[in-house]
Amino acid sequence: MAQHNLDNIDKNEYPHINRGLDGIVAFSTTKSFIDGQKGELIYSGYNIDVLADKATFEEVCFLLWNDRLPKKTELEDLKNKLIAQRELPKPVLNYITSTNKEAEPMSVLRTAVSMLADFETEKTGDKSKDDRNHAIAMTAQIPTIIAAFDRARKGKEIVSPLKEGSTAFNFLYMLNGKEPGEAAEQTMDLCLILHAEHGMNASTFTSRTICATESDMFSAVTGAIGALKGPLHGGANTAVMNTLLELEKDGEKADAVAFTKKKLENKEKMMGFGHRVYKTFDPRAVHLRKMSKKLSEETGHVKLYEWSEDMLKTMKEEKDIDPNVDFFSATVYYSIGIQPDLFTCIFTMSRVSGWSAHYIEQSENNRLVRPRALYIGEKNLEWTPVEER
Ligand code: CMC
Image (cartoon, rainbow, N blue to C red):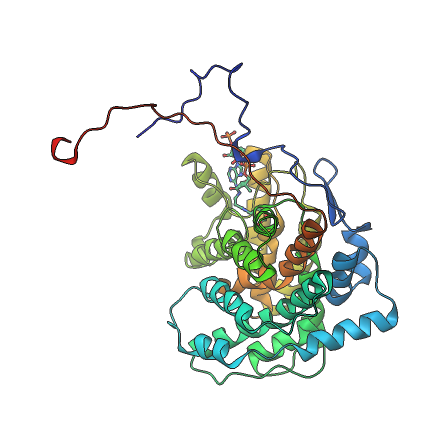
């Protein structure tokens, strides 16, 4: 196999490769801004701290899709449209209830979202309108897919979506079969706001790349789900929770500091830490940390929170690495009764707003995404017949 050693490459003849596209600016956008040194995140002009304090997830969706806050009537209109589209087409529901109960929830979600394309609402002929309708449809239906699969795999009856209430309220209702309290709804809503959009991360880049071929939004979101699923991206929140639950098994002997040091000694990664852009505390983790503390005290999971703090301190001391969004979101979701293998699906439920916003933006000013690769293999080898190889 060819060695990917670039030391012998003539640097004048070949372009520099930024591994992992580190530092490459591939698109311009009005959707979000990240200051990785300051730890600042802005969605279409509004600081995440302001949105966390004042907005609802539905307002954030409108903001991302339109680059401005909705007027009262526009917000009502969006909420009504989201409610009207919550039901799944029968064949999609049939797939969810008949697929392998052991399947990964993110795989089921990816397949179901792809199927939604076959039942898309009538096209108006206006691409900008159709794209916004598709964004609304997927934002409305993804929570239904997640809740339906979780209940189906547990042998529970599927709960139909409500004809009222917020995305957060309706999701928790469909998942648990009972209406959530105000605190749970607010926590869920805040998590949706914090995960909605985040610059040119791997899944958003995927969504824009698919859009740039003039493919449809369902394909772009399906591809983005595949990218988000990986443990270096959205899959990290599940990995964080599994780590904490492993530690819990040690009972009285559990030692998060020693655990973290050992991982680092073994050159293993601590999930939920590190970021390509933030070189300081992720501003979303600031909110999630507060929530995690409050909720773990309220729900009797205080040890999980304390271990998280021990890990955080050790990572800072040993490697000067801070936590990212996935670190405290794990204990937050766990505290409101969500199973770890659904965490990345919850991320998807929110991030679909950002992916679709980027799709709309890319469509409005498109150019095919087509970078190049540096060929480091042999050239013009002599052909050997199969019998002689
Ligand atoms: N644990 C231990 N060491 C780490 C970690 C970590 N989580 N993250 C980075 N490092 C070290 C890494 O080993 C390297 O050290 P050295 O220079 O000694 O080799 C240095 O920090 C630079 O790391 P890198 O892997 O080159 O950084 P990257 O920008 O390529 O990767 C990352 C960013 C997020 C993939 C990485 O930090 C990581 O794997 N973190 C764990 C997975 C995770 O939490 N992912 C969620 C990312 S945020 C939410 C999202 O976007 O989905």
